[in-house]
Image (cartoon, rainbow, N blue to C red; front, side):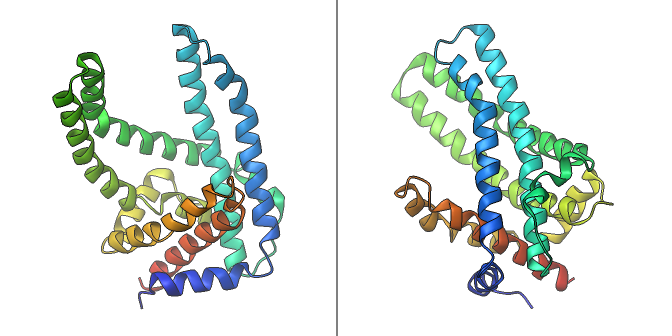
Length: 235
């Protein structure tokens, strides 16, 4: 039985009730580590030279891949939480010593696909900036709008890749892509709606200087776990 977004959220809240502490702490630690690693590179870009821009770009890519491993640690924590198992802060780091290559390769391939799809829009943006004309900017906006369609389709086709990798250590990264695509067949619209349903809540978090994300981020992740489990149960 396909559960509604409301029911999945209700289950997520039930799982998290009285157990927000560790997921919140793990989220804060994750964000602080990424900020600490990024800080010196962000400072260097304030007075950019070509070499600094290249270094900053490469660092951003590497930090993004490292963030994926941390994020999958959070996913693993929420999978355990959803099954009533004990969780620890150390779960955040579990995949750094447990085949991190699976997650890094997956993130690299995912970002590579999005980059390839975005090439026409990137070229259009460069041309618009160079010509600095209204028609060029309108064309750029149109190309980006069209580009978002295949990006969204791909995003939701491979929506479960990281959850599959975190849940099943025996699954290779390329198999996770294949299985996610199969599992998400007929469920992409539902996943899209669930993601949209958090936009208002996320927007309100900005008014709290991001503090609200301490509650919203675990809530969102646990809801995605419930979505994954609901799909698996209906196979």
